[in-house]
Image (cartoon, rainbow, N blue to C red; front, top):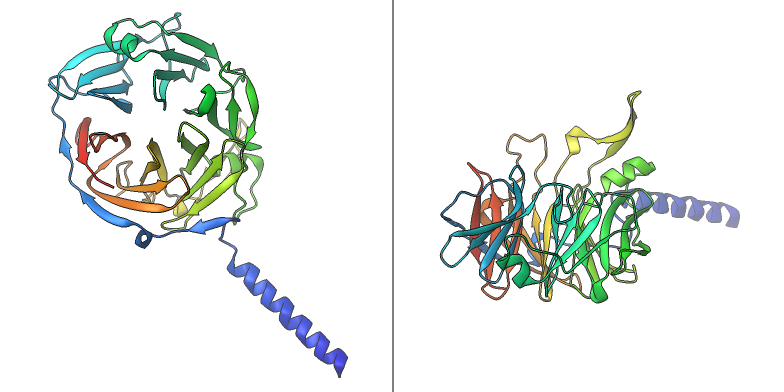
Amino acid sequence: MKNIAKTFFYVIGSLLLFISCKGNKEVYQQETTFSREDFITKELTGKTVEFDEPIMKPRQIMVLDTLLITCDKGTKKHFQLFSLVNKKKIGERIMIGQGPEEMIMPSFINGQDSIRLYDMATSTVFSYSIPEFTLNADPIPAKRYQLKESYIFSELAELSNGQLVASTNKPEVPCYLFDKQGEKVKNLGEYPVGPEKYTDIERADAYRAILTSNNKDKIAVCHFFTDLIDIYNKEGKLEKRLFGPDHFYTRFTEYHDGKRIGSKPDPNNYRDAFYSPVSVDEHFFVLYNGKKVNGTDYNLLAKDIFVFDWNGTPKVHYKLDQGVSRITVDAQKHKIYGISDKPEFHIVEFSFDI
């Protein structure tokens, strides 16, 4: 009788464990879930910033005191400078090319006391003093160096002591840490352990991400295809894994077409999540889309901005009256500037408070 009872409890225990594991199938390890109800919700109304010359096709924007700087595609010079005071265009910077002062695919690096740019095509970091970049039509970098890794990183973020962290899109590790000479210091972070068992190629695509930092000792890795944000310290230790607000992931499947090997998303479950994270004092702002890519209302213009502190605590949910694809934030003047291409490219300004 005792053996029968032991067998009964063993079977029940195993069944409960199976059910429990099955119920946790779509949960990331070490995750902290959040929902929209965890935030203070505020609605923001945007207005178009009318400059004296048209905005071209900006990929990125940065606000610098009274200047708005756009990083454009399809122009002779990469950067356009506009005054936010008189709304006039005041100049263009950096020719397209491979010359010593030229760039091919530049992007901004979040910084504090200088303007730092990263040319993805050449893996080169350029540092300019603010007066040099804003006042000189052909600015000369105070410092220039190449990252000692032959890989195209999409964007970089700055930590203390001039260190840089890059999102890798490599299957073995999500981020690299570089010193101020461009030497790789170490791998940083680990990919999430989620509901799918991915191949290396699938993992690299499924967990593509963009990052920002607090310019000191923390990094927020914001994922494109699952609503997941990982906060690491500069040693690479995961401090918070935030999952929400809709708790989804996009399944990627590896393919071989005879010419190349890659992976592609499940079209029935393909959604955009986070992009354009921005560090703002003790917080970071991040755009959230959430739309299904094959949905009839799909576009890249997001109408939600979530604000967290650097401990991962939800703070504010800004609901925008019009969508934007990229943002920059003026913390002193409490302004958010965003890029919209509907119906044509223009800059939208929102006033906010936290």
